[in-house]
Each structure stands twice: as C-alpha cells, then as structure tokens.
Image (cartoon, rainbow, N blue to C red; front, side, top):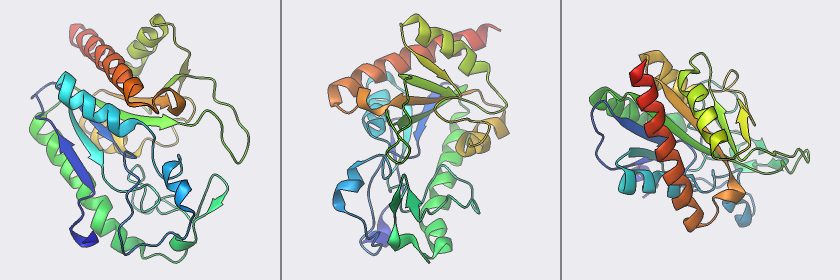
Length: 243
C-alpha cells in the first residue's frame, strides 16, 4: 500500500498567470513499511508536521481559487523542503528527539519514492500555470523544546535573493497589527530549497510565509489565516504588476 501512496495532493485548478501555493510539511503520514521508532504523540508535533498548513492550503484552494500542492508524507520520512544530498534530508534527530528508524535508512529509495515525484509534479504545475506569484506555506513553534528559544513573531517572511514580494507583504502584515519576522524564525538565505528551485530559478516572485503554529491549530483559525494570506497575496501581486 505504501508504494502506491502519493507524496503529494493537488487541490484546485491553477489559474494561468495567477497565484499557486505549496506546503512542503503539510502531512504527518508515515508509510506502513517505514518504522520511525518514536512515540506516537510526537507525530502530532512540529518535528513531524507543520501544524495548520494543510488546512490553510485546502482553504486557499477551495475558498480563494489558489491551487495548492500539499505534501502527503511526513518530514520525518523525508524533508521535501531540502535538496537531494542535504544532510537534513532524512534526519536522525529533531529538536532533541532521536529518530532511530532513520539511522541507516535507504535514503535513495525514499528520494525516488517521495522527493523526486513531489518536486517533479510541482515543477509541472509551475510550467503549466506560469504563475505570477508562488506561496510557500509553513508554520513554526512558539518555543523550541530543545533550547527554550522563544519566537515572538506571529508571522515570518522568508526569502533568499528575491525579496520583492516579501518586502511588500511585510508592510501589509504589519498594517494588520502583526509582529512580523524579517527572515525569521529561520533565514531563507540558509534554507530556501523549494523556492530556490521552483520560483527563483524561474524568475517567479514568491512569498514564503511562516505562521506561528499556536495561531493556526484550530480549523476556524486556519480559515482566518487563509483569508489573510489570500488578501495579502492578491495585494502583493497587484503591487508587483504595477511596477
């Protein structure tokens, strides 16, 4: 059954020249033939999934006409927001937790089964839709368990070389009264794999949006944030088009 499990789900019909979305960590699914060897409760935490992002992605597609490409396998099986060969592609520990089932894992097999099909399908989606803006949706924890590091931002905007969309969105989110992280809580200069590959390499503006997970744990809150993100994305696209 796991061999037939698709590493992605696509929802909605892309509007050519419009906006599309991707969520690399939207699922906590683990195939039957992969045993991670960790307590079941960890699979509902951030080390296994970006909490709330699947709900946002679905609502963007169904309520706002922004077609979404959603991961359908846990980041603990393989991190789809990493490049092939990256040492963090299949982790053996995460936020202080050892992942024994990944020690000595057949990484190439996981790449072939999940990573390559996931990115090939999104590349095809991008090629067919020719979007004017790509949204990458992630979430982050209020505090890192292993270090106690607090994250005060409500939303973070990440970017690498192209910050054109992020700069516009920064002002828009601040205008909503939010505390916004500029390349926080992570730096897109250090990790921007999916957008480097599918957006920057194709000259497409993008927004990598990180929402603090305690703000989007509930479905009702995911709906609110989908509305906010769609509004910001539409305004960013309009501003970029006017330049």
